[in-house]
Length: 238
Image (cartoon, rainbow, N blue to C red; front, side, top):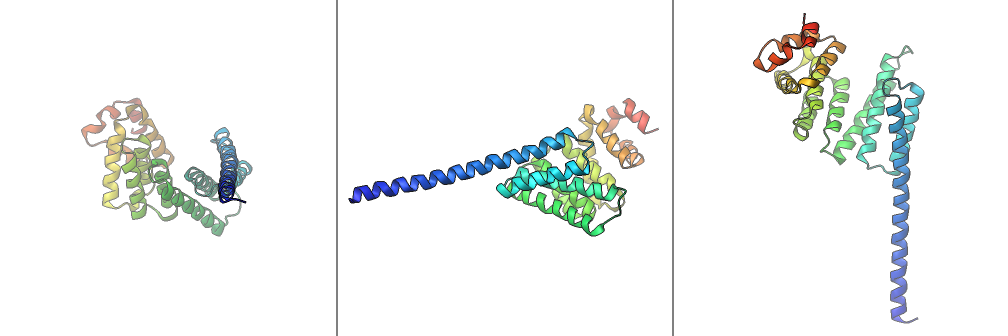
């Protein structure tokens, strides 16, 4: 066999190997996406009524997706969200509490979302989910404050960032640092600029039994004058 033939044979072999790798990884990506959308569609169809069977099925689907594509930030975010939902189910169900399992579940959620933000640090939703999970696990500590600041850095004008800061602050009001309380006030002022969405702030405060705290916060400053003319303020802050 001539040198030229050997060279062509090597080139063809390399191309075949490369093509095989491309086909393999493309197939894996397609399969992983299919499992991801299976989990996501399951959640979207049962947003407020996701039962434990559907939740576990969604977790199994996203775990399969991650086995095929372990460095996909979307999949890790989804896994963290599902672990959080599972944790919330465990602490609120009528079944006998299993504290060790609850802690393992919330820790799994925290681990997944930390891996997600390590891969994609520019998505505010992931920093907010990390802050929420960490606050449930450890309270509104410096780590939670840092995660919220990161969300703020990548989504400074997003209402969901303002709302998350307000929600976590109200949920942990008795244990907030002075800096965290000032952060809350600043985000409350910014949230008030989203007049048509501010009703969500009252909803969150009511769910947390913190309407008196919110109403007191709204008493001071010209930033809240428009809010105080709305019916929802008059109804909630009697």
